[in-house]
Length: 498
Image (cartoon, rainbow, N blue to C red; front, side, top):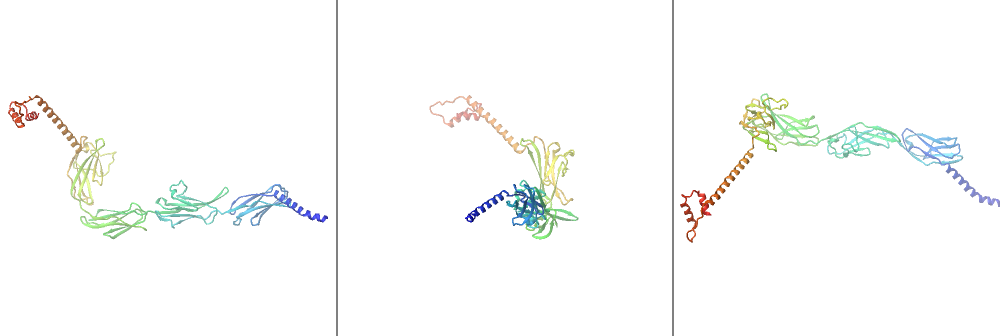
C-alpha cells in the first residue's frame, strides 16, 4: 500500500522540482549590454549582470555558434561582469551571456555585433576614362576603396564640398559612391576628389583620394576669315586670319584657296591661325576659306575674295547735325564715302590742317583743336563739343593703307557752321510754310472785309418797267457807269450779283 502511494507522489515531486528550478533560473536571468558596431582590430567590452545571484557567479560570453569567448567569476555577488574580446573579421555575429550561480543557469538575450572595416586605398575612377569629354556628354565619377565597410562618401569639387547649396549642385547627382553629371557643361571642368568614411559611436575614420582633373571640351564655332595687306620689301603680302569665337584647344586651322588646301596650322594657345599669301593689287587672287578640324568636327568659314582694289574714284563727305529731345544742337556727324578701294586709310582736315587720328587725353587737350571722335575706321568724324574751334571747312581724304607713298584722293571742302541757331532743313521748311499760311490768311481776310464794306455803300438799282433786266443788260449798264463810279471791277461785279 505504501509503495503504491509513493508511486503516485513521484510525478508530483518531479513537477514541483521542475517548477522550483525554473523559478530559480528565471530569477537569475542575466542582462547583457554592449556595442552593436566595432572597428576591425579594436577591443570591445560587453557587460553582463545577474541580479540576486548568490556567489560565486560564473559569467560566460558565447557566440551564437556556441563558442566560448571569455569567462569571468564573481566571488562577491551582485556585481557586473566586464567581458572583452579582440575584434577580428570572424567576430561579426551575435553574442549572449550565460550565468551560473548556486547550481542554476541563466541566459541573456543575444546582441548583434557588426565589424566595421575602415576605408583605405581610396581613389576616384571615371567613366569615360580618362575623364576628357565633350559638352553635353555624361560623366560618372566613382569613389572606390581597396578595403572598407559601412562607408559614407563626401565629394569635393575644386576643393569645396559638394552640398545642396553648392553652385551647379542641381547638375550633380550623388548616388552611393558615385557622382553623376548627366549633361556636362564647361563649368563642370575642374578637380574632383572624394573622402570615404565610417563612424563607430563617436569615432570617425576616413580615407581621402587624390584629385582627378576633369576636362570638358567645348565644340568649336563656325570659323571666321579676314585678310589684310602689307608691304614687305618690294612686294605686297596678304595676311589671312582664321578664328573661332568659342571652342577647346587644340584645333587645326587650314587655309583653302579655290577649295584646295594650301597651308594648315595647329592652334594651341588661342583660337586663331594666321597665313601668308602673295597678293597683287588690282588682280583677283582667288577665293579663300578657313577650315577648322577637331576630333568630332569639321567646319568651314564663308568665302572671301583675295582681291585688293586700289583706292580711287570719288571721295565725298556728308554732314549731319544731331539734336537732343529738346531740339538743342548736340553734335555734328561727318561721314566720308570712298567709291573704290579695299583697304582705304582715311584722314580728316580742318582748314587744310590734318586732324589727329589717334585718341587724345581729355585732361590735356591740345589748344585750338576741336573735340572730336573717330569711329568706323576713321570713316565717321563726330564733333563731340560744339564751339568756335569746331567751325571751319572740313574735308576728308583717302589712300591705300598698305602704301605709305600712295597718292591721296580728297573730297570737296564743306563749311561746318556749328552754332545754336542752326536748324535742320525740315525745321526751316516747317517755319516757312507756317509763315506763308499766316500771310495768306491775313490777305484773304482783308479782301473779304473790303468786299462787304463796299457793297453796303452802293445804291439799289430798280427796274423802270415791269420786265426784269437780264444779266447782260445789267452788266452793260454797270459798264456805262464805270467812268462815274470809283469802284473796282471786283466791286461792280459784286454789286451786280447782289
